[in-house]
Image 1 (cartoon, rainbow, N blue to C red):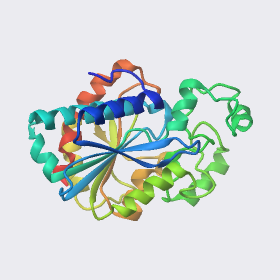
Image 2 (image 1 turned 90 degrees about the vertical axis):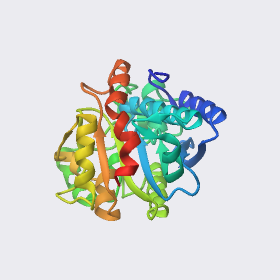
Image 3 (image 1 turned 45 degrees about the vertical axis):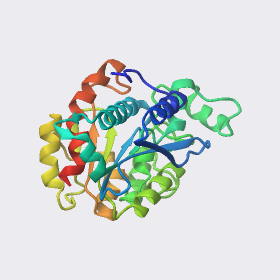
Image 4 (image 1 turned 180 degrees about the horizontal axis):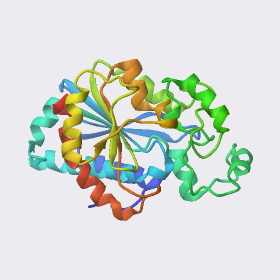
Length: 301
């Protein structure tokens, strides 16, 4: 594996520049900017005439940035296969490229990743506020630059969750705080705007998280057409167990919003085992588990 390490934002961008330099089939654009003005990369792989598309999103949470490495490994392997006309996961890579499109966001939360990896700079306009919250310890930081958990910021049972926040005394900080309103965070707003704009094209979404080796594809018993069918393949190909989200995980997530508001089949894959952040030694096994479904997902929809 090429990306058998945890990447910060600069390392990720350098890798993406190198991949796009080598492989013309990989196109780099930007979803939008984070709170601290870091451009959020959006990778597109697929012929312009391809009919259907899928979307892969990694690293909502800063302690789960191994998922970024998994996405870069996928991008690189697919690009090499296309240009060498090799099969991947028993699929014709050229035919896949011509008929299906992949949109990939390797790191939705760049500011959070930078906090956890490198701490906060004294020039950061949020420095005093964040230092009061963390006392300089970012080891468990999941949120974005201002302490909002991006995977609770979607408009899915958001206001019900605000009541739970009060009961559990969840406030702005490392994780679980949902923000002032749905899509209040620029990272989430940019992603939702992209999905709305491409809603006729996007047939399914995979959101990579860690850990547990399980996956979610329903929201309060609801799931779009084809979700049950695809879920059987997700379980078979990954070895992950289908699960039902509970407690705080029931509210404000990307998968919940996609199911409830957009009626798009969506799957949250909880990769690896242990306690976040997982050791980099798990990256190869995580990629091995996900390999077949990442390539096969668009043809199942």
